[in-house]
Length: 399
Image 1: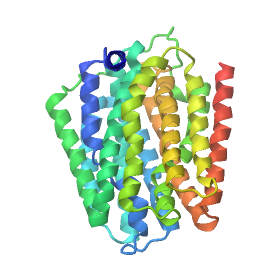
Image 2 (image 1 turned 90 degrees about the vertical axis):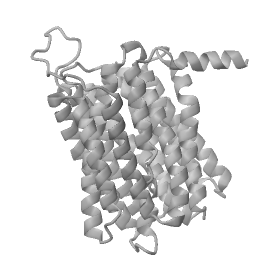
Image 3 (image 1 turned 30 degrees about the vertical axis):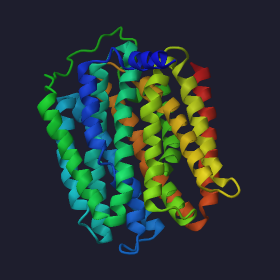
Image 4 (image 1 turned 120 degrees about the vertical axis):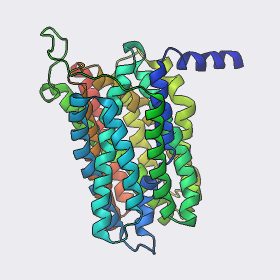
């Protein structure tokens, strides 16, 4: 039994390129400092800062707006100059901006530097997604993205777990650690990953099997819109959910950090093997549909009578497995529709869908929580997720 399990894990990780592993290592270093985002709402509503839940929601909205604009520019630059310099520049500058943001105490400056930080940080994502596609093969592309997500979530587990304890000492420490890990990831990339000599393709083959522009790919545009609706719900996990745990369930900050870290640990242990077993067995959209449905159910669980530690843990487990089933295959869906000449464009639009959700989801959720309460918020979030489940299913049936 043990040998069979070990063989399954070994097979799940085999066949990936050296560069894919290096990119994931860089991502792990970067994401190990992920502390600011999961604790930003708690930081802003802390008595020392004194901002309301609504004001914190607006800050997260600006974070999403900056991310939306940054994703567009990052995709454009990736298609123009290549993914390597875009990644290197955004990691360094993003690290510096994290440190500066931690020193900002007035609301206008917090809003301004939050926007700038997310603008730079999100410009990294289309470049990184394009790099993974470049270094992977068609038969292991979903696993390549899953490995990158594993690195992100391992980093998330470390960052969230440690962040809970650091927040108890001083919230400002979170910004310094996040900044230094960004810069550390950039230094590692410069040292171990060789630049790619990028030249934009002069021509696109006329008989190419995909459309030349992402903006003319109607199925992809529908997919991106549905994904945005789903992401509006999913992003509650990182801002309004920790606040609910603290204000309504009265969990301590270290315990909230452990709950958030549990998400990353499960992904690290399960996702690669599960993707290895599922990849190529069914249509990608079937897995996405099931995963989105599970996320919806997980948020509805928060309204169970007598919500407590057991419900919170069960909710985190359920939302994590929904994430595992949906998100790696979402990446695979858009990448299968691309060509080398427009990959940055597709990556940008896909990232922009998530970035728009970072504006609408946290900001809207915070306003609903403040004026109508968390119970109403969780009913709405769960309901929208169920709606997107049917939308993804319709998209699958239309293929």
